[in-house]
Image 1 (tube, rainbow over the protein chains, first blue to last red):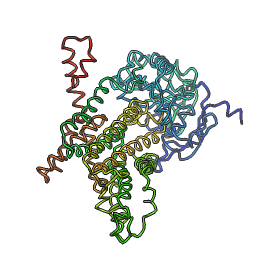
Image 2 (image 1 turned 135 degrees about the vertical axis):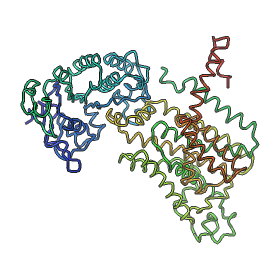
Image 3 (image 1 turned 60 degrees about the vertical axis):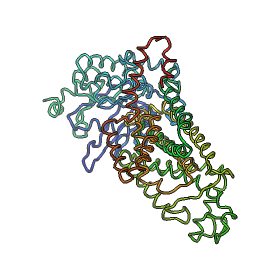
Image 4 (image 1 turned 90 degrees about the vertical axis):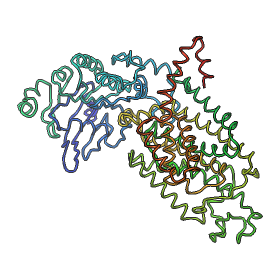
Length: 249
Length: 375
């Protein structure tokens, strides 16, 4: 049993959430291994985003269990889940538009999280170096002093990814990281993701099949809040059930 | 380096100008009566500064700041009233030695919770602590449950109404609708004389700057940037590992503490405290001061409080029945035409022109020296 615990970073078991009787996620179970890149696909309304919301504590589950390195996440507050090592990127780019790129990254730097810690926080060289490093990774080192509001859609997505990277989470959850991006931006993002998923577990929601093929270790297909199919990209693509509800059209 | 400094240059100039206005200009041009009036206006700017942080930066609109202003003011007034109610002064009462309004309401002994206010130290402590504790309770109850926006504003307004009703209803303990009046001395020093009023004006100014420095420190810290981040993307802040509620509680308490100091200075300078300064109308007026000044700017908040109150006095001396319409119109005008208030007009319209004018002038070698005497 202990060995089982060690094998998975994340164990989702019997996860159910009911909104006024409608079960958006219904008795869902899946397991994520260390350094795995799990992609969740499925038609609209399948419950993909809700699954991420449940894991990071944004939505409270009705039943089930989500264990991250043996800790039960369902009983924790959002910020505690973040401190445990789970990072979450939202579907629409959520950056602080009134602040500069530098300040956006600085606020995500994992230090000074309490009220008085934030008052006493000093912008020292370690912080600056780390921000510079991350900014280079996300192609924004020339825009550090620019307000986030002036970035393009793709750049905002990168900035939010950068804000997660600076937290260095063990489990990174990305909701449609390439949605709304140009072809060139998409390519750069795939390259960026491939670099950053190397040493952590990642859960990605994505519609772009080419992109999924590029990054996925395993794929979970959701349909009506349940797992329809799970396995390698090839296996899933050839599953007749998947073809019928999702890939076929 | 830049980011760790307390002021940018233009902020430093702004602070210097305000200091000149408060400590030099106003005392030079106003007689004691008017100076005391401006001192009263400045006590509202303590509240407006708190609102600039809570509402402008943090997006938390409180329509009940009068509660904290009033609590601070009442704490001060209780001390002064006890000092004024010596057995000799109140010898004609059926129970000498207690405040007159208690005697009128057939109270025969000082209520236990009035006792500590014999001590000035305790009273001064309470001026800040009572509003902060009250704000903390409201903050925990609201923000932990994620009550925000309009709902929060309405609930704070309800608190303002409740406190007014409570004060008026419990007149034996609080002085009722008349408030606590006939305040005379502070540790034997007569606060009703002209000299005392002038001294209090300067004390008020110094405290105002202390509060401004504190507010500036918060704004320039990471906490200040977090407030702005929370206002725009609360979820992102939460999922960056911050407990959003604790930051909201902190800034709400800070604003309440500032308001309490303002209330106490009001009591000292005006000589009474009454429920008319606690309720819904004054609370909303305080939001208007902040909005007119520019809700993002702490200096703007001070000017807003000064300007609106000065206008109120001037207009209500000539057209008392029209003032409320004027105030309403002013608020609508600010929201429609200048959403960033006076500070916005300064930053967007006046400052760039001044800078341009100085850049054009000869001797560009010393721009710092040039722009300081500009004002």
